[in-house]
Structures are given as structure tokens and as C-alpha cells.
Image 1 (cartoon, helix red, strand yellow):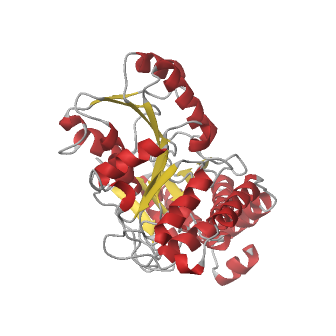
Image 2 (cartoon, helix red, strand yellow; image 1 turned 45 degrees about the horizontal axis):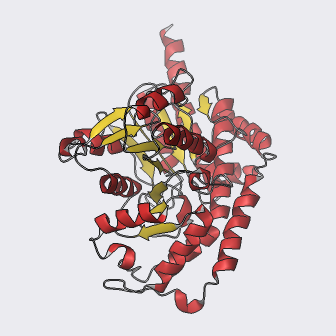
Image 3 (cartoon, one colour; image 1 turned 135 degrees about the horizontal axis):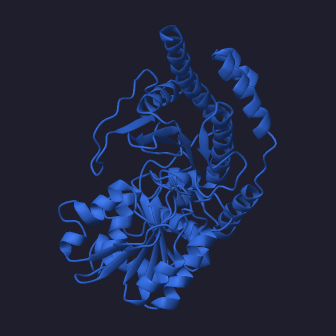
Length: 427
């Protein structure tokens, strides 16, 4: 594969050599959890018994939408959850998260973020934006990560013992130099919270983490997880939507607030996309597996070129995000422009940093998939702030992720070579 790519897409000798070495290093990496995830999804479909007549779905109010019922039942089996609310009316993972938190926090309630500062757009919705949760009378605290970048369990227990209604856990790293959390680690957080405050809910932002491990946080005692349908679960086919999965009472209250009391989860059409949702879930384990293989190559390639990466190639992964510490805004820009050349849509665009609601710094984004925002398709982004890391997500299949990383590396290395030449002339 690597030779075919390098023949079709010639790059500099240094990057080509690094790509060959990275490919050799990662070709033998195996992830046994891929088989367990695939088996779990296959078991869910076998037990559910989807029929062809279930696929079309409904329009209008969506009463008795069979495609929706099948899809949510399948997701419940995969998540080990009592109930799932998976709807197109959730436009993003952030939307599903805020809807869940809003449903369970009344004026005077207290929300604690257990894994440090949430990602910028969510924190903006919680604290800073007009009509944020804090502006509506919700008390909010954050438990800073410890010196190792891990959850500070002692501080969390002490804070929960003083009173808390909802504890929020961000599983993925967001735009922060911290490791993602495993499903079991989310369960450990839930255990600490429940011992200190038995009545509190533990809600987990599961974005980017679905189907990466053999279990989900809901298998380990959290009350509910929230996320997007156009990331891991969508398999590159879901056209939109978000979900909440967990205990039935928790999910139904969120549905009642999201739609209307008395209607709850009884409404919400699939708009003819039931087939895409179901097929996307069916292929999702294979797509996530291909994505993880591509990210291992990205990590190895940039490590070969002398950059710090997290996770390192072959390390356990708990999400589909690869951090590459490039060190300068210029290197980030060149990375994004190189990766953009590999996109199936908008390959001729040149990414530029720009303002994004909720972010103090300009944000740089590279992407060009068939579903905008579907980061299971290859993309990269990051705010222009120290330590100038860019975060690579997705890749529907390994060869596309390899190509994107090679072109990004060639773009970054080209600038490094020119800078070295200039410095040599000046000296």
C-alpha cells in the first residue's frame, strides 16, 4: 500500500523514507478489541431481527417510526443501556450534551466537571454564553486534572461530598494536552461520585470514543452517555443526529425536555434515513478499526520526523483523536493545507484560521468529507494556541488516512527545509 501511494503522490525523500519506516512499524500492530466490538454489533443485529420493512422510517411527527425503534434498540444493545434517544433533532454532540445537562439541572442546582476544563464550545455553553447554564442559576465547578493529567479522585470525592446534582465527564481530550479516558475509567469516576453523593447523576460526553473499546461507559455504571451520530457510530453513512443512552428514567426526562412533556420519546421522524442509520451502525466497527490503524500510522510518521505525538503508535486508544505537537502556528497551517489535498471534497481549498463561537483564539480546520462535521471522515483541527497541537480524527479507511498524513508531513517538512536553507544562508 505504501509504495502505491508514494508512486501516485510523490513527496520529498525525507518524508518518503519516514513513511516507509512508519508503515513497517505499524503494519503488525493488532488491536484485539476490534474483534470484540465487531462481534458485539453483529450480535445486536442478530438478536434484533431487522426486517426490510423496517428501513424506510417516517415523516412528519414520527409516531411509530419503526426504523427509529429498531435503531435505538440496536444502540441500547451495543451500549448495554436501558434506553436510547437517537434523533436528528440533536444537531451535534454538544447539543445532546447540553440538552441532557439542562434536563437534569434546575435553578440552584450544582454541576461539577470531573475531568478538568471541558472543550471550549461546551464550556462556553455552560458558563460564558448568553443564556448559559450558569446565567440561569446553575452553580458550576471544575476539578482540575492532577500533575499526570489524570482525574483527581480525591478532590472529586471531597467536592461531591459537599453536594452535587450532576457530574459531567468529558471522555475525549478535546483541544487539551491530556489523555482520553477509557470506558472503565469513566466507571471508576462514577463509583467515586456515587459513594460520595449517591443521588448525583454521572453523564459522560462519549464523542469520539464509541466502538473503540469492547465496552462503553454505560457498561461500567455511568447514568448516561451523549454523543454524535455522524462520528464513530455513523460509519460514514449517517447524515446527521445525536444520541443519549443510559438508564430509562434519565433518558426519558431528557426526551421530555427536548420535545415536550407528555410527548417524550414518542415523536421524532427518521425522514427516510433509517436505512443509512442502520447500515452505518452495521459497518461502524470496521470503519473505526480502519481509522485507528490510520492514526497509528500518523503517530509513527510524525514521530519519525521528530515530533511529539499522543498517543504513540501502538499504545491503547480510547478515542479516534491523534494529537501531533507541531510547535508553531505556521507548522499547523502547513499541516492543515497538506492534509486538505487528500480530501475527496474541497481538496483545492486552502484552510485559514478563523473565529469560531466559543473559542478565544482562531481555529484552524482541514476537512472535506461527504457529511460536514463527520469527523469519522478524515479531518484535522486545533486552536492557534500553545503548545500548537493539531488534532487528527478519523479516516474511513486506512489508505486515505495514510495519504492525508503523508501529504501533511510533506507540507510541514517542506517549510522546515526552506527555513533551514534560509538560516544557512544567513549564517
